[in-house]
Figure 1 (cartoon, chains in turn green, brown):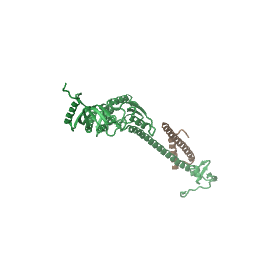
Figure 2: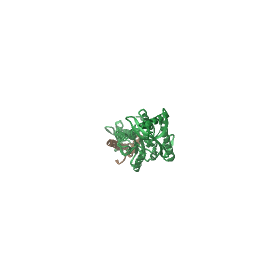
Figure 3: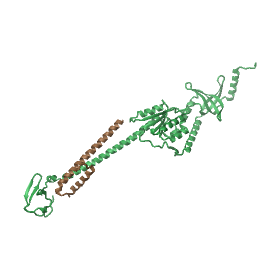
Length: 385
Length: 71
């Protein structure tokens, strides 16, 4: 035991050995991240990088993001729209470092976001292809647009009964309800909330369960809104899930999504009707009802115009009839200077009955002339009056 | 004159009478009676038209009040 050396001597030896082997060298590795501990205030992140083979862990090493590389984590979350957390697969550049107190570590210098994005996009494309292949009745792809049973359902003329799937006390819930309740037309809505976690590993299953609940009373709803707070860096993954997407595609009540993102569309967005944000979903509902009200206003105007026109025409015809009747009345004829000849209280229509010595009454406007016929002659030519 | 005539029936009879008056085919001794009948038909038509107008206006007001209540 006299040959013992100080531990620090050994660790120094290790450090020197590692340093001489790895000094200035950068490696690119692919690994699964686990035991992620982020310290945002000091901008550090401690984690382990792990590799698995057939489900078994075959290696593990501690890794660190220091303050000068912490922005790589933020970039990862921003671009991939998913949190940097246990289970994520990353490809990154690392440097080997040994510290006599803290041991062996990999300093992470950079995450290959493009690679991660490519992997994610590949998975997404595979899911979309599988959806079309395995659900030909409910999902078809035409000119790059996914036509599903759900997004081709016609909307009711008025939307009033809404099933809302959202996270409790979330920005999405608040924005959606506020937009509907404060609509300037004062439309009333019946909103039934189906609250659940919208993010995380199980979210797709939880959302699907809420949809199953809604389907049990599908006759009670005009529309389903799935909303999530805008601007969050929340997990995008649940909305790319195959089972959830297939379920939405064949869902019997129109589904609108407002899951708060503008960079890309999730697969659920493509299977339903997408409105980007909770506020936009609510605004669309209000606008839809306003459009129906406008149709009614227009129909009412047309009814009023048509009935007014018809009544005016009828009034005009009656006025015309009145004028003709007035001109035809015997009193009007007398007023115009004509006379009526009567014999034995009967109007003489045929002058042939008039003979000499006959007693006649000539009725004028204000007077009657009693006379005896002395002579009757035929007019040589027609008298023009 | 039967007052149960509806507007179209009354107007149709009135139209016939007016055409006869315009054509001058009515014997003079029947003219007064025909003019009287035409005036009665005219009154029926005018009354019915006024009633129809009032009914339409009442219906419009009812719809408008219902709309306001809804809001």
